[in-house]
Length: 432
Image 1 (cartoon, helix red, strand yellow):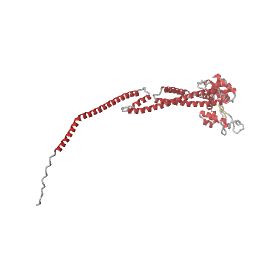
Image 2 (cartoon, helix red, strand yellow; image 1 turned 30 degrees about the vertical axis):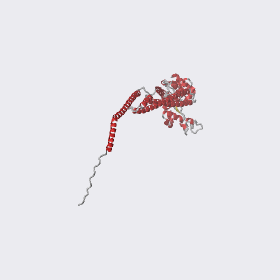
Image 3 (cartoon, one colour; image 1 turned 135 degrees about the vertical axis):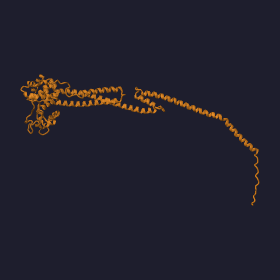
Image 4 (cartoon, helix red, strand yellow; image 1 turned 90 degrees about the vertical axis):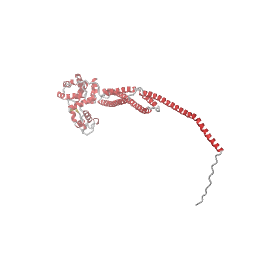
């Protein structure tokens, strides 16, 4: 059995010394003092913290009250702006100012609406400005057209006076051509005037806020356009006055009385066609009827259509052929001289005249292909009427003043026997 050594028992710890107990006591006292001090200041600190919180709450309340007051002021302004914006008497520019002011009310519920409306209002104002500008441009263009029309009317009056006293058929043709140009130009300007009036009317209809000055100008422009539409564009080249119809007085007996030895059969056969053609052309006044009878007496010796018989003056390949290659009457093709020799009641001569009067009567191709159609009494009568109509105004003036020489020149260009024309025209005039 092994030997086990037993250690002696430990000695008990010595009791703490008096100094150590004093140190511990002093530490505890120190901590107790500190705790006591903290407890003693706890109430003032709490009050201090509570004061800070109360101050913050008051400041927050003041800020809130200011914001509420500010929002109230903005709402009052917004109401004022809305009333002015909605007022029908507010001008577009003022409306933009109020919307601009309303759009600056930060935080107001209507701020975004005001901004959108401001954009739309500016767009409308820009559109309105364009409409007003277009309207004014149309008014100015219309006035310019009306001024030009007035000037053209004066030119037409002068040219008509010149036509009324034309001495020759060439003068008549020249005046008629100028009158046709003036009337075409006047119709063009009249169309411009009407178009501009319509344009301005449409523009103003889109702009109910157009200024009174623009509306007054538009009204005047529309009036001018209406007047021109009824009076200017339809200005005829011949007399605008009513023509007294004396054709019923022109009887075969009157013709025979003024034309000794004329064939009554020819008169009875051809006078109805002649009177019908003159009536169709508006030449039934006594002056033009007398002129027509004078022309018949000079050109149609038997009161019937005639055709020049071939002779050395109108037959191709003769030394004396006066018609062939005669460019002033349109004879430009071989054989035109004989083909388009004188026919009808007035001796229509030359390709150009057959073409001209055929076109006026609507039988241009037929008459060119068959010149003998000019001897048909109805066609001959219509050609004579058309021929007289070209010189109607100066013819009436010449007949009224008894200037029969000028009257004859207006028809024949100067050729023809003046005595038979004068006798016949004067005699018929006295009986109508």
